[in-house]
Length: 69
Image (cartoon, rainbow, N blue to C red; front, top):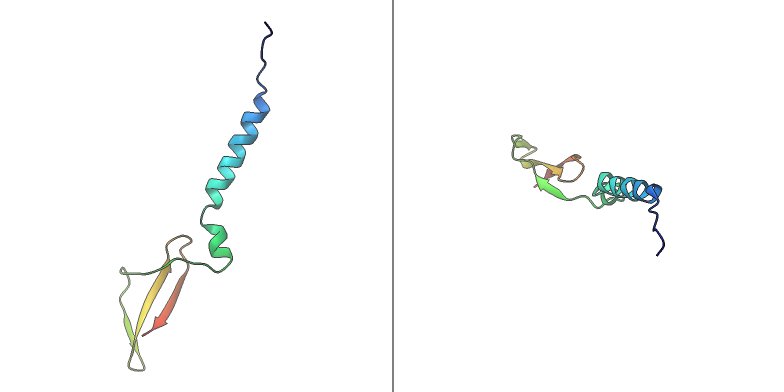
């Protein structure tokens, strides 16, 4: 029988790839404009020109925008 030698560089490459995937999860969608907008309930709403102003925040990247309703 022969001895099977495991190459450690394969495990390091796999670990680095998995770590990079975990860091990029969600950011690639937002980078292309596909944000996941949700109403930010921690900030108070405002009224501008008689219309309700709501602050919405992306759940993935944290970007904010205002919506007039």
